[in-house]
Image (cartoon, rainbow, N blue to C red; front, side, top):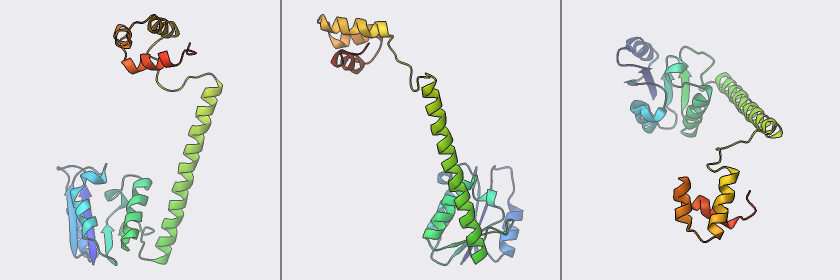
Length: 187
């Protein structure tokens, strides 16, 4: 069965052209909604479409941006369709047709490029973090207590003051003071 999916981002927009194009493409049922494409979880008609699909069905959209907002999002949706043994066709993007050998090849290449780009981004982030550490940049949350306050809190704990009282005086959680008291080498 051929299913269409039409989406516009706001209630004031009209998806009549998309529906006409999907009907002309032979869609037997069209799922339509007026909602932002930001999250597939918020797109109830899209979720209903995915639940309706059976092996051999084909999902058709007018343009890729009606289905996915990023190449990562598109890859995830295409993966889900592949798991269901369903095809996908974008009428406005002739290269994106998983019902043909050429379309599947191009989608595999696009998936490889997307994965390569994710690896490059991950590598650049790691290198940036290492450079920052080498330059003495302290990463993470700023300490709530200064080194002097830590020493003072440890001294107060050793003198017998309760962890709760010390924590209250510095406006921190008692577990922070407990950890300081357990690690006397903390300066």
